[in-house]
Image 1 (cartoon, rainbow over the protein chains, first blue to last red):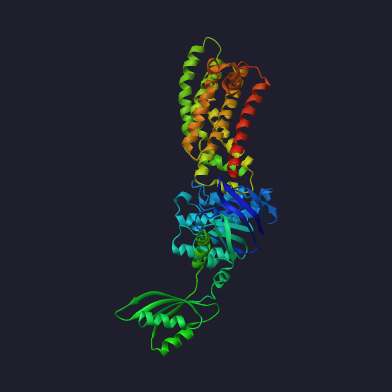
Image 2 (image 1 turned 90 degrees about the vertical axis):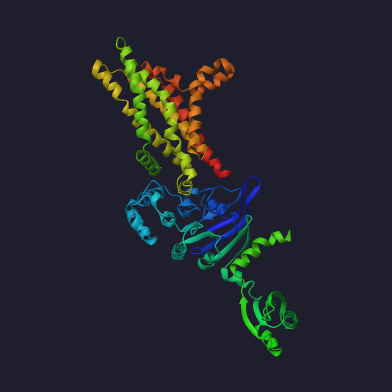
Amino acid sequence: MIEVQKLSKSYGRIKAVDDITFTVEKGEIIGFLGPNGAGKSTTMNMITGCLSSNGGSIKVCDNDVFDAPKEAKKHIGYLPEQPPLYTDLTVKEFLNFVSDLKKVDKKEKLEQMDEIMNLVKIKDVENRLINNLSKGYKQRVGIAQALIGGPEVLILDEPTVGLDPKQMVEIRKLIKALGKEHTIILSSHILPEVSAVCDRVIIINEGKIVAIDTPENLSRGTENLLNISIKIAGPEKAVQTLLEDVEGVAKVEFVNSNKKKVESDFIIESEKDIDIRKPIFRALAAKDYPILELKSLNLTLEDIFLKLTTQEKEVE
Amino acid sequence: MLSIFKKELRSYVYSPIPYVLIGLFLLITSITFNSFYSQMQTTLDENAINQTLGFGNTVMVFLTPILTMKLLAEERKNKVDALLLSSPVSITSIVIAKYLAAVVMFLALTASTLIYPIIVISLSKVASVEMLGGYLGFILVGASYIAFGLFASSLTESQVVAGIISLVGLLLMLLMNAIQPIVGDFWYGIFKWFSLLDKYAAYQSGKFIITPIIYYLSFISLFVVLTIRVIEKRRWS
């Protein structure tokens, strides 16, 4: 559906996008994840033909964006970071204009506009000037605009930015629903959003792809390293030596202690594929150090993201 | 292309700008028309029209930037240009549609000045080919101004800066004939190409020749093409 091959883009000496390659299959929802300035918007601008590249190719529905832009653009609906709205038009007039721009058939036009307005819930403001709408409504008009003409591919640049939490949930639901019929690329720096909505995630940093996988796989890749946070009633040093001797424990990190109550907190890292919770319980029970609290710390997408995007700097 | 043209026209019609411009233009030219006409009564009536329109060309140097400054600058500032650029429409047709919309507004302004020939004809019962020639020249010059204003609007995100660029540019073109002693013959030969006002004198005297039309059309094409290039280039940088 979308094939990106060795795509590069420089602004002067700065490489905004550096040799990235990925494909998106039909019906997939792909999440673009990365810190600010990672090259997400630049990549999206290139896929939609708003920006040229310094090398590489992009194919949308088998049409090359740079060689056959008109054909390729017919298949794309684009919501840029700032929704492109003519604020001096009413919602209906604006969508009518976009329909003409995308050469929607005259007979289907009104029906399609109605359908889309109902879908994104802006039917109640159709006769109001866009200028007078709230940010949430403007964002939805932006999404409606992208849906006009029934494009197979939707490119959404930070679709939930600036919305209140309730609206965010609604928009996410909407995107999820749209994903059944459209191929979607969306960018975000909100991690729960990406893991909730997307089938696959592309993590991008400093113009390069650092990881492509499903959200589950990305967290599973590190899941076999089970981290445990534990609170124990017992003296700090004795407990630490005891814990370090338990089989399967890779590292014990002392966090905090409360001398009055004789309680200590630790974070324990296990070796691969070993569940150390039971041995720890037995070892502590044998010495009569009761466990007050124990919880496993699975790496969230957030941790993975931070790990992947900060790794290079540590190596340097 | 038609959809962009219609949209541009609509936003002109719903904004106060064209009405203010037409009002201003009529106010200024009616004063000069009155004085030209009272001077001319003993000689040829159509000269009053042609002199008024000639003066109108100078007035348009100040009014055209107001008409054209927002054409491309505003969309870029509001980031609406992404909508047009990601649509299955070529940059060429976007630019041409916007140009034509501004020209139509200018034609509406021109139509409002028809009051002067109506006065002349009703008083002296003469309609002359010189008047028609004067109007043709006026329209060609105005359309050239708009092409330059459009180009200026593509250079910047700020409407004000675009307006100033086109005002300064058009003023310089107005002065092209006076710079001969300053720049010397060689440069004058080049610069005088940009002098828009002295190219259509033949029309004012009632002769129709093709060269002025070709000149103005090439001036317009030059700046429309430059505008398209500026937008293309921005995609590449």
